[in-house]
Length: 445
Ligand SMILES: *Cc1c(COP(=O)(O)O)cnc(C)c1O
Figure 1 (tube, rainbow, N blue to C red):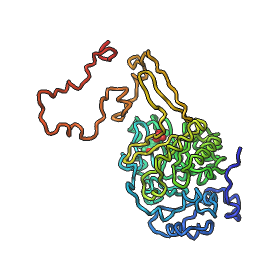
Figure 2: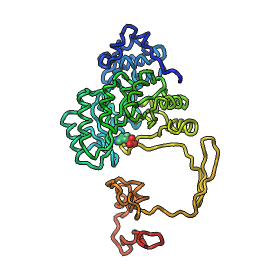
Figure 3: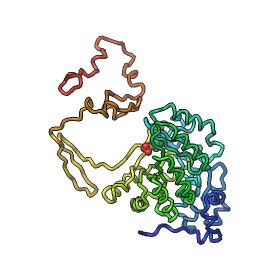
Figure 4: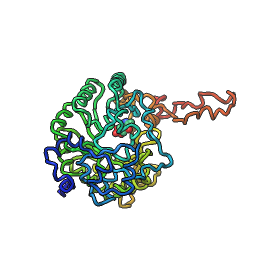
């Protein structure tokens, strides 16, 4: 196995003994956040110094562990750019928003985002071990005053108890793994008391920013609340240190399935070769690449954005070129709150009756003959179809295919098409309902 990335600790923190370095409390209390402190480790550029000396900037805090992964002499270092602000961060761009995913609008109670039918995002803290400059939640993250209060947590739990359609709770923030151990355990326990919650997920960058926090004790605690899944957030191969490798190993051995979410960032990982190296290193750690996100339209992240074409190019370089399970899904998280929308190269080239034309990653073109005779699946005799879980108002396109939904109309569609006209003799509601009498129609038989 190729060696993991080695840190610059030996040159920048030579005098810190292991027992301090490996203590996550020491890491948290020795985080760097001012130009003066950071300058002792890294020679800052004018742009960085200017940003660091600006008031009102999104919070800066970097663990000694993470800053020592930066090459102190390289202003283009991919880790440096994720956590050290530059003055370009203050440049506004068209379409920039405070809450680009409209999360707060889709929160029935503070900190709980219920967007999909069967699962919720639960924000449990605004604090992180280190702050990413492109944070999608910079509107609240980093601000201790914005963190969630006890009564808000109780409101979240109450909402979950009265909403039996929720079977999956994704804990995020902020970073759930910076919570005090007691609080984290209480939270997991309270969720596990709710019978309809089947799985708990945690999204955390602690293993990347502070792998020493992932102690055997923490992992044992998490494992008490199985089934529990965890996604880490690695953007570049340089973040894969021996410490991260060991932290992932501890979690995997505790039966926690690990995934990775990364963000496509200009100047950091907007390269097919970096991405391929990253995903291949992740699967060696038994971490399954899950999502690659297009960078959100969030204040401060303008200089990190790439065209979507870059993401398509990266996906083209992965599919077929590496193990299928090393390939994340590239998604655009819909501005305004539509959720994650997958985007990928086109592989279906054309089609006719019973025949489709496909191309593969090499540009090889093939035909697939579809069956001429197919006995369609019969929902009337399928117990799964009979007992399908309702998705109130959210069955979407699948509901159009599978159920009785015939249209999804833009808001105001019916009204605008009335054209202020009258209810006349040719307008009869029956006319636009299927007659249900053809062969194979459910009305028949
Ligand atoms: C990402 C996200 C989820 C989880 O989505 P999956 O595709 O199931 O991983 C749930 N709720 C919200 C609001 C999200 O942004």
